[in-house]
Image 1 (tube, rainbow, N blue to C red):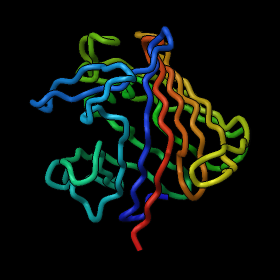
Image 2: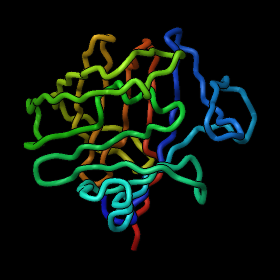
Image 3: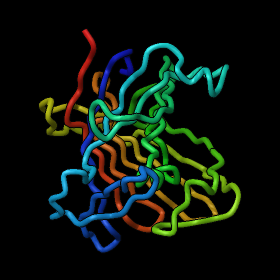
Length: 219
């Protein structure tokens, strides 16, 4: 799925706990950001995120023994990007979600993850420490690290109507529990396009929806 040069463009929507649709805007300092309403016509409002698979090991200067496939996250083409990684092998595919600005909220949710055998009924668990740097007063803050305990299961196969036609996907249902509460993710995985839809339930009861709208593979 994550071949070198491949780009995945997702649109996203944020729904408040009261089901109000919002997006976000990054301030000129590129550090602070704010929610904006859906009818905001400002062209700088963020409605997409692009995940690109990078060549080599650009993380080496930060983590010399980094062994994940490096990926970039951008809001628009030809703009600065941040980096993290994915793990793809015969046993599983695990993806670090976007985590800049608004997307810090996803650190408390289950990460997109599917484990072999890719069939209904496969289930697994894992856990991860989440640092307080991912907190925000707009959803939840804490001190130090909290431990997220994740549970995953492939619950069914479902055909989705997408930009790429009707795709038969594995549905992965997952939850994350910690002292802060519970979050959830329903992920739809396709063997060619990867995670084509991600439906998050966040720590504050809001929801984040990511849908794959463009897939580009380097020739």
